Structures are given as C-alpha cells and as structure tokens.
Length: 423
Ligand code: AMP
Ligand code: GLY
Image 1 (cartoon, rainbow, N blue to C red):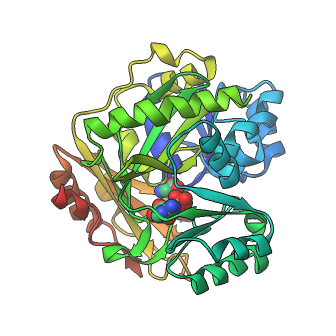
Image 2 (cartoon, rainbow, N blue to C red):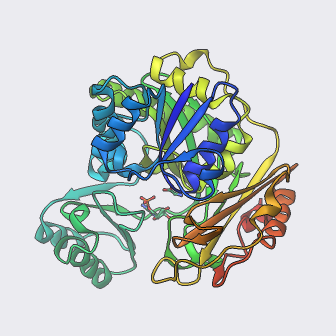
C-alpha cells in the first residue's frame, strides 16, 4: 500500500522507520520530511499546515493511509479535511485533538470525569487571574491554554513571579493567542513518566513507558525544550503504577471523550506525575511524543500499519500490542544555543556509520540535503537512539554512538537516563 506521513522531525523519522519495516508498505511519502526520512521515503515539499495541498497530493497519489505526526495540523483539523476528501487518516479529528489543543478543555474534562490531575482554575480575564493569585498557595503553575511548543508553562515560586507570569502570558502574549486563556494550577512533585497509547475511539492499548528530559542543560538546568533525550521503559512505571493508571486514567479518558461526542482515534500521550497520592495527569498530547517515539517505536513488535488501521476501523481490541523485552535510550544532538538562537546549515559528518548498525538509529530532527551534503536545519538536529538488554546497556550504547557523528556546535546533555541509577 501507499502511505503519506505528515511532518518532518525526529518523531516522523521514527514513524517512517517503523512503517518501512512493514511488508505491507510499498511506497512511503513524507511531507515535508527531512534528509534522514528521505533515505526511506520520498519527501514532498508541502508543509504540514498546507491542508489543501496535502489533501490534493494524497488524492492524486491514491494514498491508502495518511499518518499525521505533529500537533498543529491535528489541532487545526487536517484529519477532518482529508476525511472529507475520502482519505483514510490515522490521527484524531479536530474535535478530539482539542484534548491537547486546549489545556482549559482538558482540565475541565478531567474534573468532570474525576480523572486525577492537579487542582486548577481557568481564566480568560487577567484581572481575575491576578486576584485569584492573592490567595493561591505557592509555588503555582501557570499554563497558556493553547499550543505553545511545550513552552507555555511557567512554574512560579512566589506571588510576584506569578503576577509577572500572568502578564507575560495574557497581556504581553509571549506565547501568542495560546495565551488568550490560561490555567492556574497546583504545583505537584514527583517523578514524571510519559505513556503513549493507541486508541480507536473506545479501546485503548498502552505502549511501553518512557521518560523525557525537557530542560536544555545537565542536571535539569536551563530552559525548557522540546526534549533533549528519552529512555524507555521507565523503571519508575511499576506494575502498581500501571494498575492505578488503568483503573483511574486511561480508559476513563477514552470514555470521557466518547461521552462528550468527541471519540478519539489516534495516539493519546499521557504526561503523568507519580505523586504521593498516586499518578496524576500533567497533560495530554494527541500524538506521539518527540523524542518519546524514538525510544518506544523501535521496541514495538507489531506491524504499525496493522495497529493504525485497527485504530481507524475500531478493531483495536483484536490487536495484541507487544514490545521487546529490552530498553532504548535516545540522546538528542542539538545545535549550541538551542532553544534560543543557533546556527543552521552546518555540515554533518559520519552519518554513514549507522548503516547496518543493528540496534542503533540516527533519527533526523532538523536536517536537510544540500547537494551531496547533509546539513543542520534546526535546533534539535539528530536523535541518536540505541537499544540494549537493559537501560544501562542502552545508555552506554547510545552515548557511544553520539561520537560517530559530528558537526560544528554539536551540543548534547550528558546525563540522559541518569535517573536509571536511582531506580
Ligand atoms: P506540560 O506542558 O503541561 O506537560 O508542562 C511542562 C512541564 O512543566 C511538565 O513536564 C512538568 O515538568 C512541569 N509541570 C506542569 N504542570 C505541573 C504541575 N502542576 N506541577 C509541577 N510541575 C508541572
Ligand atoms: N517530548 C514531549 C513532547 O513531545 O511533547
């Protein structure tokens, strides 16, 4: 069959790599893709937000299955536009992608259906938000309502910082229209775990757990980023945690969306915090995590096309989702300066070292081809992933492989997976 993957980052490369393993895939297109994806798929120069062009392309090429990777086109309704043109699409419709697209929506959903999460209030008036803060317990967490590239969250230690935060989000609109509404919520403490799942509207199947490292610098210092590295599984995601999540969170979320007339088909990503009072939802995403996908998908045993089709057809209950009994670690190679200012167009050397290296993956996040060369084209450049029998071995393998490639201004965290040692 013919497939089209929408997006062009490390997540989409991991999806493409998984799709390419399927004997059912005859031809893979990716829009817009990147230099790494271009080695296993045909890249098409159409942006993920160019809905009309993407749809026309998919219709013309008689695409059998479209897979939408990033949050923006999902929240914007690409799935609805494509379905209206008769295409089969993996990913939530607009009315379900709101689970990620609006934090106020997701918080209200959790409250209504008693899904454990931090206590909160929603605001669309900055004065009301400021007044509320006067009696709020510190630290407090401020969140812009809409999509803000994972950056619209401020953790404020005291009243002054919190008031300044409200102004930043709602008045200065630092995160754009995402800040026309905001959530103010209770600060929670605990370990964070990412859990991805496949959902067909009524049935949910949980993938292997993972943990992200969001801050730019070692020791969780520096600015928040899209993610500097991941490992899977998380040793903190125990059988007891899993049981609690299955009882109070996973199916409850799927059922809540169905009850609201917003059946969810695609991937739900649960950002969880393991608190003293049990697991609570930090946030939902309506897509694979990036770079969570880079450590979870290489460990999946199923044919991803079968699983995605089951999500679309409502037959996920018949799928036995299985993961390898091993571990994977992904270390992101970024350009020095990310997530702020950084150079692009720097030549990348050593990529060929990954060819035929079993259990090693070099997922491209921000790269492009320039003539014979592959050059950097973003802040996060590559996701170096390796498997191992256990997390320690996977981590050693991944860090060894980070030495295989080089580019000017190459930057990485050196403590990805340090938490493994505390498990
Ligand atoms: P989010 O985009 O909602 O996942 O928030 C980004 C990051 O902010 C999370 O990964 C947490 O590290 C942190 N965070 C968000 N909400 C809270 C909270 N209620 N308490 C403590 N930390 C939080
Ligand atoms: N790695 C976090 C995310 O994809 O949102």
